[in-house]
Amino acid sequence: MYRLYPPGCGGALEDVVSLTPIGVPRQKITVSSLRDRKFQHEPITCLTAYDYSSARLVDEAGIDIVLVGDSLAMTMLGHDHTLAVTMDEMLHHVKAARRGIQNALLMADMPFGSYHLSAKEARRNATRFVKEGGAEIVKIEGGEKRVPLIRKIIDGEIPVAGHIGLTPQSVNRMGGFKVQGKSLSEIEQLMRDAMALDQAGVSCLFLEGIPREVADMITSEVSAPTIGIGAGPNCDGQVLVFHDILNLTFGPPPKFVRRYGDAAAEISQAVEGFRADVISRQYPDDKESYHLSTDTKQALEMLLERKRAMRTRQIKAID
Ligand code: KIV
Image (cartoon, rainbow, N blue to C red):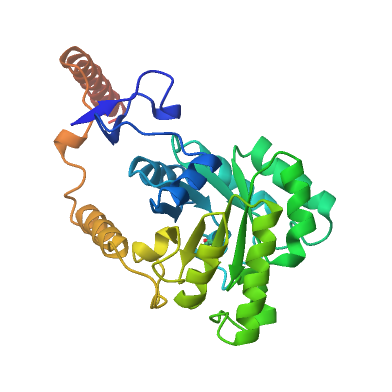
């Protein structure tokens, strides 16, 4: 059983049947709901989405956080890493995702270069995500060295999510996408980073590409909920990339990815089917065509008949 959105509640397509089942009351997710979840030991779910339709499907499936991640540089724009994506490109996707979301918390990823030059520019860019894009929280990669900047953004009434471990924007410094926190000194640094971000007031902390033992330690030490990706099962929540779980990445997935569908196969099959039907003239058929009314059809036939007769008379006159 599905419900229709009441007028004014479904964005541009409010009259279209929603996928949300009737009778499942959905709560608007806020940064404080995330903290409640940690204290109640209820797992937090997060998925990336980068446009209206994917964000709407993710939201209607009941996911808590929709992350417009800078991973869109790779999944949507075809780059080899996340460094190239700009503020304006990110904003374009955040705005589209906003239109598809009703209940999930909308998180915008601050792209490489948008917070590295000055705290003032970082705050201006974070403000653009909220004001122009409708984001409710921004995410920033990096540990204790980001603390002054994060405090300034939070002072500007914008919640911030931290992100430590394998931070893809540091790919050049790390020398590749490598699991972090494997040595004692790296573990110490990660713990310092986590504690510093927690004290700075981040609303949640993303832990990417670190051993599960280290993620466990961080999760029990910090008050902010931790959200893991390649960080084992004991984080307060889990995030994956939309394209990874649906096999839309055109390559072997990292170890931590679990595939929940094969959209690539579905899409290829549908596209090949369309092509085959057009080539064999099986698409469109009569039922998929518009028709004239009987009156207009008769009038058109009479008109054409008159034209044909006139043409015949003209040819005879020339002969
Ligand atoms: O950009 C992204 O998708 C992310 C997640 C991997 C956490 O930052």
